[in-house]
Amino acid sequence: MPTPGHILVVCTGNICRSPMAEGLLRHALAGQPEPLKSLKVISAGVATADGVPVSENSVIALKKAGIDISGHHSRAVTQELLDGALAVFGMTESHRSLIQLRGQPAPRHLYLFREFLPASAEHEIGDPYGGPLKVYEACRDELVEAVPSVVAFLKTLVVQK
Image (cartoon, rainbow, N blue to C red; front, side, top):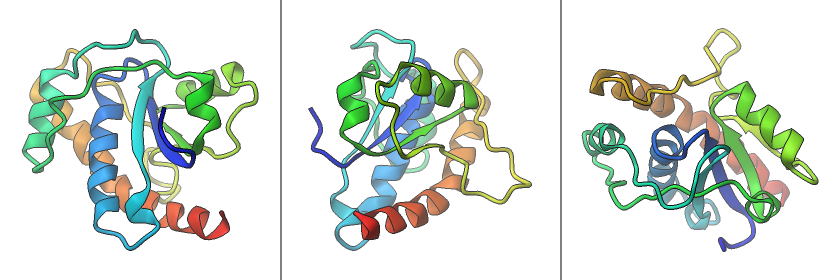
């Protein structure tokens, strides 16, 4: 079980988007001062079984950014993961809705990963599952674009904590 106050990133199967987001956010937080540097980042899926290996194209797309997620295996979202999260970030409105419906209680800090970008930006991140590498790379780039805004938001949460 992760330590209380972890950051939880959620997608559908936890083998494409959320593992990439986890790796990117973990990398970004490692370069921040405490207490951000010590925040644990984990990912999970709303419709997955535990133990499925991360998709090969997700691994390749992040390796091109210098981040290794090859050891990742899927895990399902649980109430325990939700309860311990400082913040939960989904990839789409459907992820947010499922977490709100299933969470008892739903997390107080539940957002889209791209929610903190300008209103003109697309806030949902499409599923690259089964697509060619270029689709995974586009997904990675959408995640990378959002990371600074997520880190800035987490700074406000950590100050409030």
